[in-house]
Amino acid sequence: MTAQSAALAALRERLLTGRLKPGQPVRQQALAAELGLSIVPVREALTTLQSEGLIDYRPNRGFTVAELDLDDLTEAYRLREVLEGEAVREALPRLTAADIDQLGELAHEFQRLAAEGPSLELSRVNRAFHFLILQRSGMPRCLNFIRMLWDATEVYRVLAYTVVELRGAAAREHREIVALLRAGRLDDAALQLRRHMHALPVLKEVMETVDRS
Image (cartoon, rainbow, N blue to C red; front, top):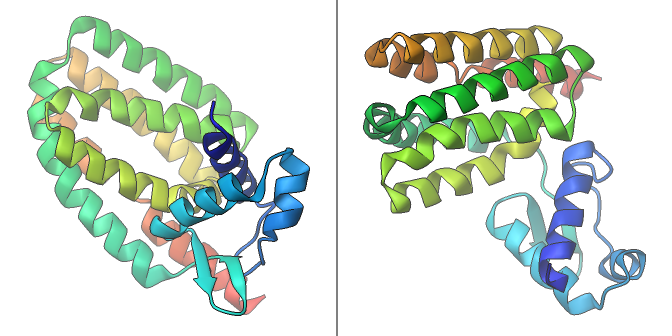
């Protein structure tokens, strides 16, 4: 792992666990000292996160964690719906029996983790489930755009997973998608995958509650 990738991984972990909160300043020198790195890879990692919309930079103020913005989040989910719809249509006929077995294992692991509560591992397994499907699309440029949208909204999904009902619904839908794939019902599986993106209304409620508190 390079110094920049180590800094990037550490920053992502802090963002996703809430150790760095929206609006909070990110002190480059303090973070570099904590990680045992020079300030250069830390600044490069912050610039990468700035390009993803997770970090803001303002002259004379420096880097801060981006505030949660429902408009930006809504746009990202609309783009995901379009791009992932295209990728899924290409991907599903190409899934092998081994792929579907692996999806089943990931769905089982997600269900187990969902019962325990929100965690980075829960988000990792969710991502692995979806990208196992998407990567079979044979559309690398489309996949790169989708990956950027996932990176930019990962912190929001972690927030959504604090809602126990959403975790339960996601676990159930993962199992249903696998069952449809095993039955060869690809059109129904594609429809279920599109319906599966229902974190946005939950996040809207969560964010409005935070704003009122």
